[in-house]
Image 1 (cartoon, rainbow, N blue to C red):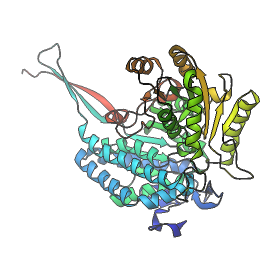
Image 2: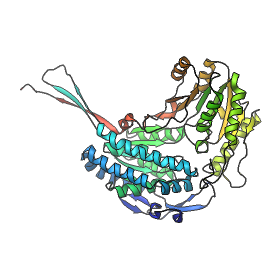
Image 3: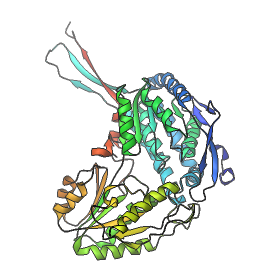
Image 4: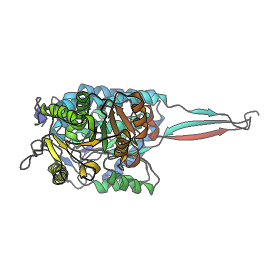
Amino acid sequence: MKDLLKDPTLLRTQAYINGAWVDSDSGETFPVHNPATQEVIAEVASIGAAETRRAIEAAEVAQKPWAALSAMERSAVLRKWNDLILENVEDLAIIMTQEQGKVLAESRGEIVYAASFIEWFAEEGKRVYGDVFPLPQGSSRGIAIKQPVGVVAAVTPWNFPSAMLTRKCGPALAVGCAMVAKPAHETPLSMLALAELADRAGLPAGLLSVVPGAHAKPIGDEMCSNPIVRKFTFTGSTRIGKMLTAQCAETMKRVSMELGGNAPVIVFDDADPAKAAAGAAASKYRNSGQTCICANRILVQEGIYDEFVDELKKVVGGFKIGDGMDETSTHGPVITRKALEDIKSMVDDAVEQGAEIAAGGQFGEGGEQFIQPTILCNVTKDMRVFKEEIFGPVAPIFKFKTEEEAIAMANDTEFGLAAYLFTKDQGRTWRVSEGIEYGMVGVNETLISSTYIPFGGVKESGQGREGSSYGVDDYLEIKYICIGDLDS
């Protein structure tokens, strides 16, 4: 892959620990595959518990002098990192497309999105304020100050391998924390490239270490059990998130969990079917359906059901599936062949129970990992596509009669990350937005994510918020100080 890059030194295959590029203690490596071609594009160091422990210990040493700097000084380093990311968008996008599969246009967009978290929190770190409290005793004053939580451990997913790092380390570093991060084993190269740029920006050694590994358990166990780590942040499945939360309870770590989703798109019969179909498609098929907030269930009021399906078929008919390096491709492969088989089994389950494939339905032959964007009609609540997160380019279209039924269907899940609705009725906008149990709601809009918004869910979709002015809160401790005897 180096021959595709203007700066081949961005392609790093060693771990980055305490400011140095190192092999694993065992010498073990693991392959990284291109999902479009199944080609092995790199062999990456596979880190274990001992190396992770050293990274955590180095972070503890580096964190204290970093926290002692002014917010302005920390901001200056982060801004340099932001600038370097933006200067290398094309190379970083190529690395991402090669290891993750998304089309280059989406990869470029993610790199800019990733940089925006560094820029935002470089400024937000300057705005960590305290409070003064009136006390009943007149000779005393109470104040509250905010201090960095300390060393943070992070585990990030493969679907947004750059943005999920910066959305976590941006606020952590800005307020004076240090971070040890583990990338998904499918996509370690993007995070390692960002670490290279952080090093060039002058981020002090030990403040950000990257520990890739083929075996998640020893790394995760060390992160969750090590008492030096005071906060653990994870983006991934609800099942794994629950396990990690339980492990972190032994040392009472602060946790942030951005977990699974089952996002409904509710289309009422007063909505514009073409606009609603375009919005639903933009959410459902982004990154080939591999996002935690993508449309999972499309609920359409019976009066416009057929018209909506026709409009969605028009949108899907304009897609071109192919290698993400081909600029004419609109959608790339899914991440692994196993992911493809899991998605196919959900479609097969629906069809066996009476669902109809209105578009797509073709799954890659042999070892291919391409899925033709698919629309399922005549689906019901007892099918797996209603209950489970699909995480692929399959859109099941459900039918409902009343507003109350739509709210009940939307809430009939243990998840509560993102939801969307299309309506022209302002009263309904408020009733439904307040009635559905989700952390984020888009009204007549499905592209809701940005640096400026508090990203996160309720119920079993997790806890905590990332991005926005709220994004620093989980990386800070509040300390109360009472100062007495002031009248002497």
